[in-house]
Amino acid sequence: MTFSERTRAKRKIRLISELTEPVSEEISLPISIREATISDLEEVYKIELECFADDSFPKRLLETFLTSPECVTLIAVSDGEPLGFIAGSVEKLNEEPAGHISTLNVKRGQRRKGIGRRLLDAFEVALTERGVRTCFLEVRANNIAARNLYLKQGYRPLQKLRNYYGIGADGLRLKKNLVA
Ligand SMILES: CC(C)(COP(=O)(O)OP(=O)(O)OC[C@H]1O[C@@H](n2cnc3c(N)ncnc32)[C@H](O)[C@@H]1OP(=O)(O)O)[C@@H](O)C(=O)NCCC(=O)NCCS
Image 1 (cartoon, rainbow, N blue to C red):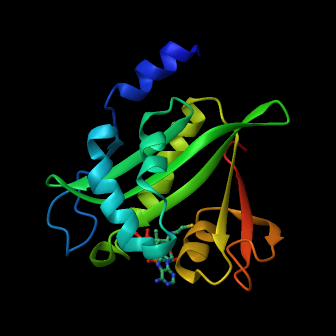
Image 2 (cartoon, protein in one colour):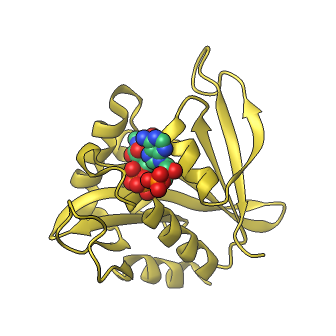
């Protein structure tokens, strides 16, 4: 795909996943997952701040995720309200394109309703559409919620990352083969 084709593809707001059933009893409306655009920046930043506070990505970086043709950012929305998002990129690894998840966030009050899993599923679909066969990510070793989610979704530990998030804050690199 050429640079301009990718840019056009990125700009096109595409409905990646639409649920006809509510995700849980607490969400009375179906959620949809679509590609996020620069107009989602403020909401995406708000969610990032809520989830990571002092550790959150700066707005400028989120802007890059929303505008770069190498990046994929998807947002989950219900009745116009953003509930969470996932952002990552397609990188070259040994001459092959590989997906990399940089952040996945679900608003506090909306967790444990399957939104994180659906964002991850949709992100993987977006990657495979770009010809990507593997996906990587890093997670804090003590982030049980995220680790459980990734393990459940087929990600497997690849490497321990000592002090990756600061002194005493280890990380784990996980990998999933998207195509069998
Ligand atoms: C991690 C996160 C994205 C999960 O989102 P979510 O929408 O709550 O996840 P889901 O409802 O799709 O959960 C899917 C599975 O993940 C695991 N999981 C999710 N939250 C969990 C928790 N608090 N404790 C243990 N396991 C959990 C479970 O296996 C769950 O399946 P189950 O509900 O059938 O048991 C969310 O907790 C979050 O935004 N955390 C703050 C930001 C963060 O740490 N992001 C990860 C960066 S790497």
